[in-house]
Image (tube, rainbow, N blue to C red; front, side, top):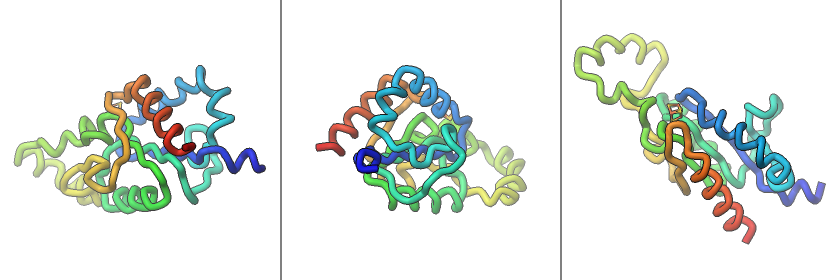
Length: 161
Ligand code: SF4
């Protein structure tokens, strides 16, 4: 139990996106699982387990763009529970390509009005940093695995110091 307490608590959350960065993350597990299972407590990572704990995180990874007030509130709650928050993948970092509708012309906007209302969507799709403070970003569509590993190693060093 004492050893468990020393592990860094990890959360992985997906908002509006295709979840391909999650796939990259699970692929990285093939090489890093032995090392990561000793270092990390995967506290809220739905792709790895069905019973997840939403209490506090040393590092929360956020994938996808923010498309509704509900998602914005969930993201703020994660931020409040996390020491470090990392935006992963282009949709989270720059709001695209998930936010293509931000660039629709007037006619296209009219055509999707009913869908916006039906899903209680925000008028504009937001990148993560438009909603909460972001400590690090991993660009790429999907995320660049090398930058992800670099960011993870830097944050681990910082949090353990
Ligand atoms: S960044 Fe690309 S791969 Fe990742 S969720 Fe968005 S569209 Fe999919």
